[in-house]
Image 1 (cartoon, one colour):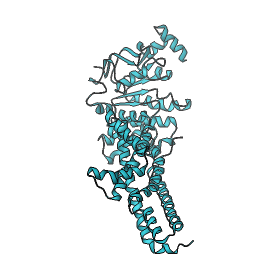
Image 2 (cartoon, one colour):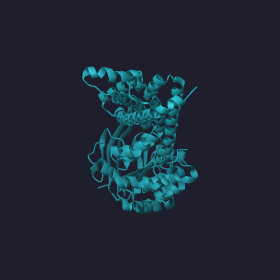
Image 3 (cartoon, chains in turn brown, purple):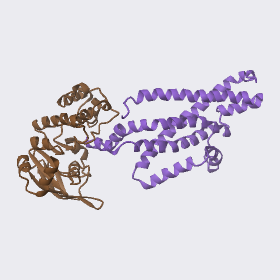
Length: 242
Length: 219
């Protein structure tokens, strides 16, 4: 059984059908990168996987459990699925430590005496142990995104979703975030990313999924997909992304 | 000009100022509770409740506070609800302050981007936890300046309670004036007292803000 099973998912916003029957499996430990032009439905698909959007038809299963906005243990489910956003979404009124430990404490994952150690541990993994007492506003974009990833790691997720996490960053800050993600990949985290970073897609991902007009247009290992795209749409996308 | 005849009334003036403070603080606290509850109701899904809150806001923001006090003091007794002067004024001013607070706090809640709520939900927090820990603190900070200036308006507005003979500062001033015929002196003194209280509250609010809202502002 795949960790994530997506079956014929459809989703419409107003009159626009954004997902037109998407099916996709992601195995445990796999790094899957979703690429495609804006409007191809890749972010929507990602948001459906942790029920930020509900699907109109079809189904999504994570660890065998069907995912939808009204599922009875939605909160428990989301504690197992981390998501990092383009805009970081750190809580501005909480210091880095509290940003990280708020959810583990409120959901009863850890007690107060272990909170600081947990924050130190996950911050070390993203290389920001010295920023534990900083306010989010005092950090650069790249640092904020790394804290946001650390915040997810503190919940020990079984699956990580990344929604264009480097798109809002200055070019010189992209590398530090990608390095953290690469380290996570090496440790065996199952990851699904929506990204425009073709270098990362090529070097780290096990599989590339090219979405086009609300469908999975083409998918396969990065070496094959980038070298020999089967469809003209992917060929032209690769050419324009260079 | 002669302030000396006022000297023997200093205890009455102090008592009046204390009643004014009590009326202000009680009405502000009750009004703030109404404000948070009303703002939550306005953002909720229950349409009848939303309409009721809307109606309440419009009613109390578009009629004179003096009439609101009169209605509670003079009219409600004929429906069997008789409140003393101070209590009538406190109820009326709470409702008046509450009507403004609902709008101010709702605007504060609206100023928090939905992405913050989403981030909280994605960490597995409940709706209440997201509201209490993620939305409310920055919303209160954004609402704070408007709440404090509304508070000063409330402080000055308590003088209306004199019209139902609540023993607050303005009513005491009227009493002293009728005894001494020193109109200018009496009103000059309570004017200074009101001004002093307003300034003291402003200083207090600045101290509270510095302690409660320590995170840096967005650049």
